[in-house]
Length: 470
Image (cartoon, rainbow, N blue to C red; front, side, top):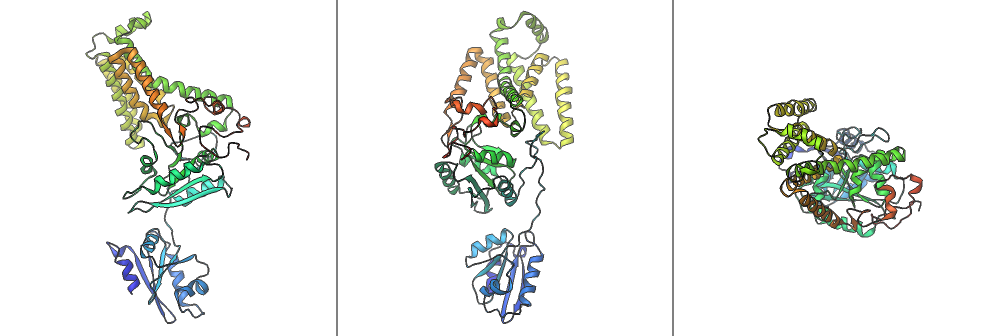
């Protein structure tokens, strides 16, 4: 049959798809289906319904009218579009003498069960997480935002993968210029394939080479729904459990979904710990090296005596010693993450305890350097999403502190702050509400105020409806 040969001719291996011929009255037809992506019962049911139809069928249009009423059928003459549907799991139905195809939904493939995401575990609150299926992920959002105002614009990105991407936003809340800018950037993407949502990040960010992340990422539907209610736009990619949100500001890294499910004073206390932990993690090794090399008079006498006893006879300078321990901890962390879970845990214990203790006893490194680095690394885990950027800054600050002292370190910190303040994506200053000062947004910055006081949406995020109740 010519229609079947036209479809099979587009495949490098035609045996990837299966064809079944049938006869319905005087019409000779065939169904084309991908058995790996489709429900095997649908082709059998369709063929049975057509071959046993009491009504006389004269054309492809009659199938939808008389024989296949329970199926969602769309007639198309675009061969490439039909092939894309076939690759998504739909079934094609054609008859001899008609160049058109009937597309029938027969998609059925295994998906992962909905469970708590490993990257955003909570003690209280919803435990549902996104999975790798676009339809399921959109249903999780629609269950939480039961409003016709929820807009979902679908598009395909990738020449070969034809990945489905859904742009989700609240039509009366999100700023139109932000939505339009995101859509235009997505339409300009010309790439072979989109395997994960992270492939979109460089195309969405203003400065893709920056150390700092400028796109929000979440695996929890409740977190994404809350961000949509504030005026952000969510990008859901088929095949990825990670949902992107833009615009994005830095304080989002210090906020957790669990903050809003606990008492406000405790949530505020935890947020202060996160800010202090990040500052401690980034600057502690640099301050340790700078004081040892240039400003030892600032170190208390008792601590100085203990320090001098610990570093006596070491072959490495304070800077080389600290950099060595930092790199050692980074290698151990990377190895523990890449190894299987059981082996990774043993790797962390062996690397951190046995290797560190052996190096100290061998006189290669000092115990204060191990303690400073361990304290810095533990503090860094208070904000998991900033581990990558802050690890790079920690190494840079340590190097500058060891070479230029405290004054060079202060200049480096000021330069980093100036750079962060200069980031501005989608009319959202990256360091808002601190720079520029947006006093109304301080209720959800360091302090987590009661929900009854948050009657306005954040001014740091562009939106067209500042009041939450409207």
